[in-house]
Image (cartoon, rainbow, N blue to C red):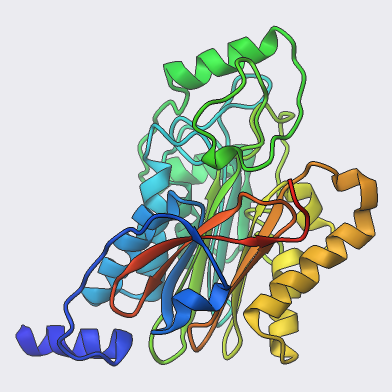
Length: 340
């Protein structure tokens, strides 16, 4: 068993008997390459991604596959009732229904996704079943929910008292205005409709293999049936063998207009660093959309096969969590195109 553990840790980081350590540092600013000195192994959006990274890294350390790791990591915020942007306790649509979107992807074309899934906590796990047990890549709405039941996922209401109260307060004015970086806000405007969204997560092994996951409850109080970028391959998530992966966060409509994550990976394939690739797509969105994106947040994360990280966003406030080959997790602030 000890020999197995040694080989696992060596494979993860080439670091032999250095023990698994999963710590969370305070958010700090700096170049995106600062956290890449020992090679990023797990990368995710927002401060709450740190807990997801810890679980994903532990899954790799005990011999789980990359798909096992990204699924396990994504399940953490999905089950967290204090997180209103992902899974259980997510804010509902304007009709009071909590609907979930998720995608999971490996680097050799394995893909599974669901959208408008209801009454199922772990959308990412249903997405994995789509990938592994159907000839399809994407199930939506009633069909996705029925598939979840057929696969044995328990039925559970996702609307908690706190989320229902926020929805009923919103109904008093019924105005939707996306709010940048709401994922990191401690206090929120009473009755305000917030632009909650996503956790995107990327993981790699020391030999450069990669996988990714993205899961969300979408915009707070969105129109019934709205699907954002998160479950769409090439928008919310994209992974490619020999190149790397990318994921996005923020207002999904702006990401889908440019197939943002696929664009990041294409830039990396063409020779750009992850940082350069993230900056290119954000600048493209800003040029394309002009005043239409005033006050809107969009951010991208990228990870290449060597563990180099890139992060860039439209507005200040986007944070991300990086776990290196030693298992140390650091939360960083992404650089932004515009000032607040």
